[in-house]
Length: 331
Image 1 (cartoon, rainbow, N blue to C red):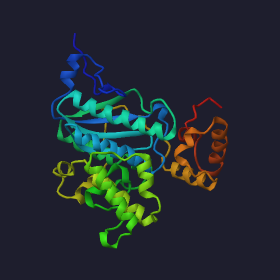
Image 2: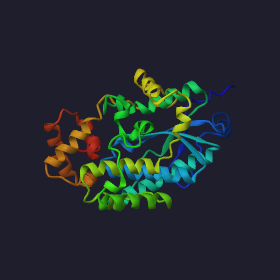
Image 3: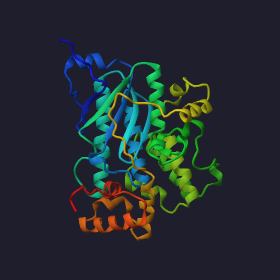
Image 4: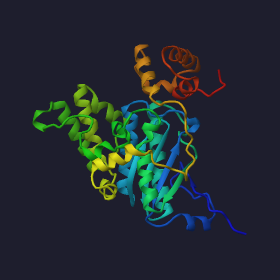
């Protein structure tokens, strides 16, 4: 009897080491030393978990800090509001699953501490698909880059900060070049603080990030955000660009095709993710400044907010429920 090897493999997450779910012979057949794996993590119930800048930076700096400590090479990363894609090269299943599980568990702990909540954020298992040939690898790189385009957050991939494509072409794609002498004392202190944390292999927590940005002008906040991303970056752009003649050629490839991923079952939502920026704007107009903790409000308050969001935006009930962490049918 012949066994069909599946196009994807799953690992358990949320513990110190993730364990391979399938039987041993599949482990040997599917995982090859040094092959780049596309890792896909999805939130429980497809609920949103990234609400403000700090949410993204906390996850990003945790990911980068642990990537430096682990024996892995990062080819790509894309942080979306309800799921995460990464391209990781590792020499063993233990290295790959251990890195992903450690990153996830620490992020969940830090995230929950900030919001005074408990429980997991991501589904128990994360999907992983090896990219054994060059064609699949390049297609997957393009697929990750175009995720925000497919979800209608932006028109072009390089307009989205959290797929990190724009940082291949510039160290300050969303701000401006600066000279230290021309910066304010407050921003200089913030940059030095980031340097200290990065040099000492410390990720940024919510209190640290809030302190870094406190009192800065909008222009300075943009400079600081770009600086943090570049300072912590672990994506091996040199390996990515080895397959392209130039950054412009990479963008041409990204713009001309969406890329593909047939090895992982990523649920495609027919609704645009761009509406969530409208939700945040509407909540601020309603006087709700603490967007980060909106998911911790009581059910009655959530349903009142849901009614206002539906009236004030061109959105679907499913999108509102995802944003507020309301279980469908609980009304």
